[in-house]
Length: 78
Image (tube, rainbow, N blue to C red; front, side, top):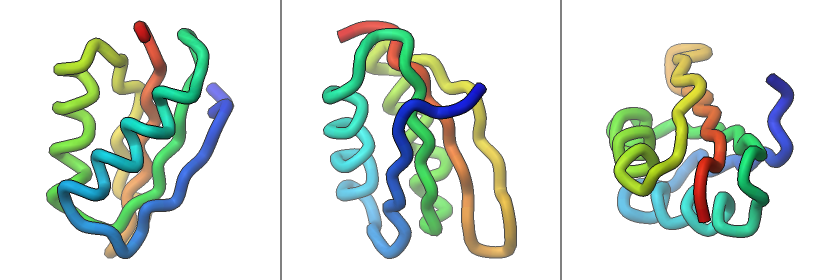
């Protein structure tokens, strides 16, 4: 699935990582996918959990190198 929007939150730590991701997904339409590039390991676990808690669908959590992760979240509800 090709993401509809991409954000790079490398260099940020919690809670700013989730705040940026949440704001990005709020601006999207239901059914669209958000790709998130990050380098904070804790956020690679906390963002997917928080997004699911808010009713969104986690499509991908992948460590792409020694320091970075890619997450893909589909907006399921407003």
